[in-house]
Image (tube, rainbow, N blue to C red; front, side, top):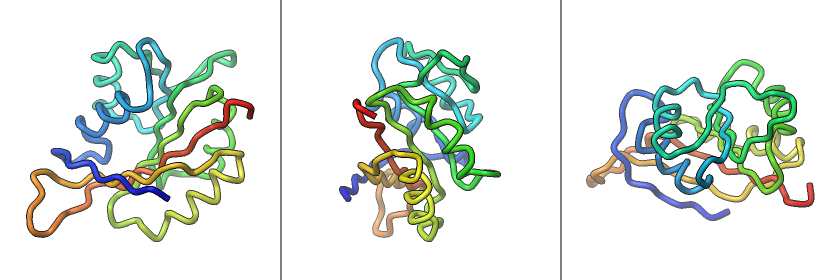
Length: 149
């Protein structure tokens, strides 16, 4: 699986402002709908500044271009199953994990695959500026819903 490293300024929140901005810029277009499964003020603000619509809950007819969640969360596998149908065709679901949660990657990937999502990318957000020892702030696993799925 391709791994991409993003050098970002970070803060105490898992979904920092720069991470939220990069996710939105890379995985959405103007006026797309985002489902926020993180309750991140940074994600909310970045979406509004980028001209995206963002909700914490969707109406039954709405489908999101991007779903952002963090792991662990209560009933995470159940949350994935419930919200997979909220993702539009060819949409992306991203799961943010703290940098020390690498042991969870196989569990997250398995849970997402069981809902019909395809694992497409691993993003590693490291604290910038990079020093001799890189500190991983967040691992972000990216899943894609097929256009025909």
